[in-house]
Length: 172
Image (cartoon, rainbow, N blue to C red; front, side):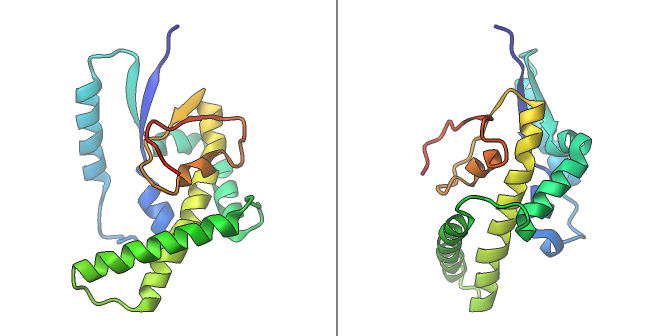
């Protein structure tokens, strides 16, 4: 059976996750393009493989993505068990960032750690939910190489429950 395997580089994630926290002076475009070239050169042997930027896929669905992302973020689109998901992510990231800054002997306030443990995870759920309908329309199924122990990627199908998702790595 013929197939096409598309590797997607999540080039929009930093901005969608951190919004105004993202350093506007930090141009990630060159780094992302370099990574894309490396991936393409490593996979160029196979005619059934391609490497694309997520932004190239999302561009054709921008209004749909924005509607779903903003709806989940603002709570007008309800996600089942979102409070439980956010609590798990908050607890996980609070421990992660506390340990991270302590190991590096960096001084941060409890409020800064709370912000890191609260806002990006909620935006991450909105990002995945917003991407789901696009993936369902653009692809037959997706494999998420997600090593996240909390499996935030499972939220990619929250608005598209019949979309096929394959997880090649074990998780929660």
